[in-house]
Image (cartoon, rainbow, N blue to C red; front, side, top):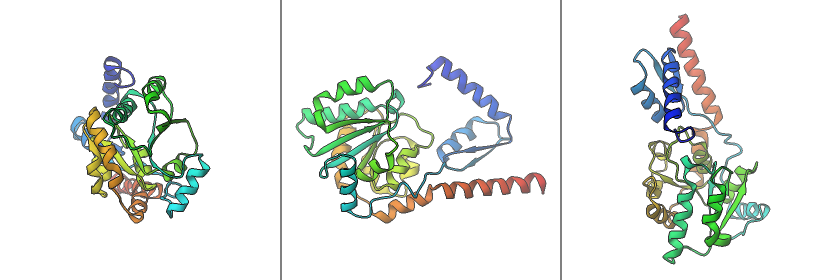
Length: 260
C-alpha cells in the first residue's frame, strides 16, 4: 500500500492472499512474517521460516580502528568523526525525511555534535525533498547515491539508521550489524526479532514517526557498543550458508512428508 496506494495496494494484497491460500506449504523470511501469514491463511497451509541470507564474507566488521580509518580514506571521508549511514531507497515507506528532521531538531537545540556525519546510500523519489531538508545541515549530510561499495561504507561507519514504517526482513540492518554498526531503528517488530541477540541496541529504538525520539537515539548512539565477535556471530546467523541449510531441511521434511 505504500508503493501502490490503499486501493490498488489493498487489491494486490487480497490477490496475493488468494494465491497463497492455494498452496500447501509457504516459506516466510522472518518469524514476524510467519506469524502474520499464519493468522491470515487457512489452517491447512503450513508456514515455515527461512530468513534470506547475506554475504557474511563481504559484510564483516573492521579488524581494527586503523582499518576503519583506511576505509574512510579510500571513500574520501574524514578519518575522524562519528558516521551514521542510511542504506536504502529514498521512499515514503522508509521515511528518510524523519531522520533529517531529527538532525535539524538537534541543530536547533544546539545539540548536534560537530563531528557527526550522515551518509545516504541510495536514490528514490524523495531525493529532492531530502536534499532540501539537508541544506541547513551543510557538510554533515552527504548523498552518495547508488553505490556498489555498500560493504565498505558500512564497515567505515559507526552506526546504521532506519526509520522504516514496514519491513519483511531488512537485510540492510543485518548487513550493518555484521559490519560492526550499532543500529538506530524504529520500533517495528522485525527489528526486535533481529536485534534480540544484541539487546543493548534496544536503547536506540524510537516510535515510528517520532522526530524527537529519533533525535534522542542519535545522541545516545555513541554510548552503545558491542564487540566484534557479536558482529561475526550475527553474520553467521543470517549468512547465506545458514539460509541454504534451512531450505535444505525444509525440503527434506517435505520429501519425507509427501514421498515417505
